[in-house]
Each structure stands twice: as structure tokens, then as C-alpha cells.
Image (tube, rainbow, N blue to C red; front, side, top):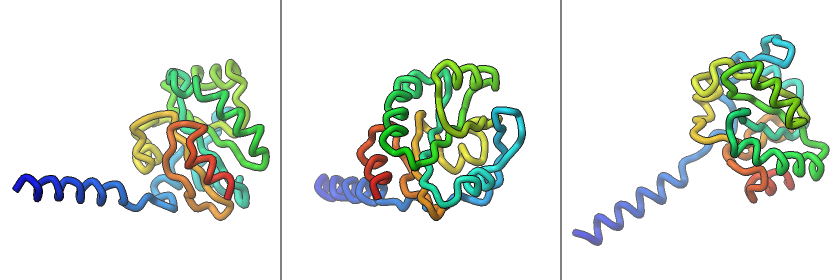
Length: 163
């Protein structure tokens, strides 16, 4: 009986590790509202359209997140190595003022957007944010090539950018 239980647990672990990850964004996520640095509303669909034909590294972060700030030099290294990639940052900050201050303080280059509803937004729900920073790679056709990485030097992220 003990062997059967162990086998079932192993099988469940194998199955749960092989659950398909999304390759496209949900309609709710695509239509979710974000704010630009100037306070203008936009949607994820519009952001993807603005970068159509380019590979995108999406960085979900917050200024209060020590791992996010610690990872910024690695993001800057990515930007130096992969200059043809669009770098898009979604902030989960608690206030727009903190978000804007952090962009300037840490000299973060790229396209910046603020998620007013944070993790409770449709994007947050779709991505199932349980840790930040969170990196995603979207390919030139708008497909999600890498759904989840938590480090800017993650091997999966680097591999996704090579192809």
C-alpha cells in the first residue's frame, strides 16, 4: 500500500509539473486598464500592438520589492546584451508617486505602466502573480514564449531571448 501511495504522489507531481502554460493572453487581461507615466489609460492589447513585431521582455515589479530592485542590474545587463528587445515594465506599486520616483531613482529604461489594481487586476489574475519580480517573454507574433521567470538571468529567459 505504501508503494502505491508513493507512486500516486510521484505521478501527481509529474502531471502537475507538466500543466500547459498559456501562450496567449486572456481577453480580460488584454482589456485590463493600465496607466502610462503621464496618467493616460491604456490596455495590454494596445501595449502589445505598440511593440508588434518585436520580442518583449515584460518585467512585473514594485519599488518596495527588494528582489525587484536587486534584480535591476541584471535587467540592465539584458538590455545591453539584447538591444533589439522591447523592455516593458508593469508596476504593482502602492502609489503612482512611489512608482514614478523609483523609475527615476534606479534609472530604469523602457516602457513603463502602472497597474492601479495591482495583483487584483485582470493581468495579475491571468499571470497568477505569487512572486515578483516576474519576467515574461512575448515573441514577435505576440505569443507568450516564456510565461514565468523570477530572475533576469534565469536560463529559461536567456534561452527564450536567443531563439
